[in-house]
Image 1 (cartoon, rainbow, N blue to C red):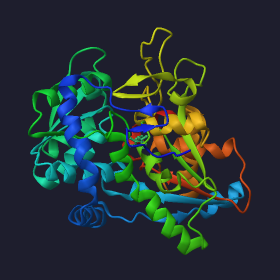
Image 2: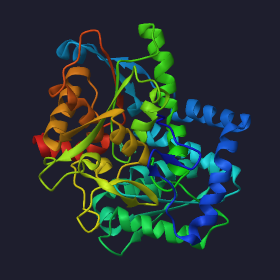
Image 3: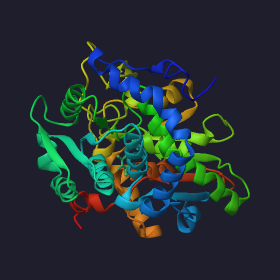
Length: 393
Ligand SMILES: *Cc1c(COP(=O)(O)O)cnc(C)c1O
């Protein structure tokens, strides 16, 4: 059993590239080149340099003393919230902009829902002086005004998707249409471990810096590279893929993936994709997704925009199906309380996405000698309005 991708682009039965024929040349160009480019010393050097000087890596591995005392176990927080732009997403966009340059591309497109990936993409385009077009549903543009303003300040053009439900799914369709029309000069930066092969694997490799650092940081602090558990929240699955990556094949290390239960797994308003999902194809890959009996995609719901996705990356579908990772679903209410708790016990205000993974201590007990590493995927600044309304602050 392997938990990594095979040469055909599958994790077990999940993954692959289910794309319209007109997209084939673009995806094929990437597939044939991505591993070769990533292995080039000059690529590695440029990537490492930017992660260090621009993103601010390595991000600290912080021993959360008061949380540990409260839950009677050893809790470490991997501080992706301290990265430039406030989350793990920048690791991937830095990698992909370098990839785009090596492929000779001059124009970048992306799709965004809540705007976080759009901001991370606009950021690296400004850094490299590249043209940037971000597709975003008209409804999302209205809901996420601060991120739209950020993208504009960074020089990106934000194009509204006016069809369908005017949200992420429709923005993705627009981006794909653009890419088909501009195959030569354009690279499409996908923001999570989703989409057709090779995207899930390429994004996982860019995010793998997270577990690479955990290994040596934990060695310094605990004398071992291996935690007992690695925990991460899952929307599409990129921060979890990064935190799990170097531990995937090492079954001594237990993996916990935390999904958003929304108002409850059985409430009809949820984003617990693995638990509720059935096999299907979304964004060019075979995976688990929430759908009706006749295969229509169900609208997901979560209080956190970043977890509000009807599918999950194929790596996670495989981790779920094989039982390699334990999947937990955490409600809006539990996540909000856990976000407040981390703020008060450690002085760290987490993103609401991240707060889901902190809520597991309410439902699962750990041994005093266990080392539990939580991937703190992002900071809560962007969620302040949500916290204000929820807690009446
Ligand atoms: C986007 C986002 C997520 C969810 O995306 P993944 O690809 O599942 O990591 C989680 N946390 C934060 C802070 C995010 O911005």
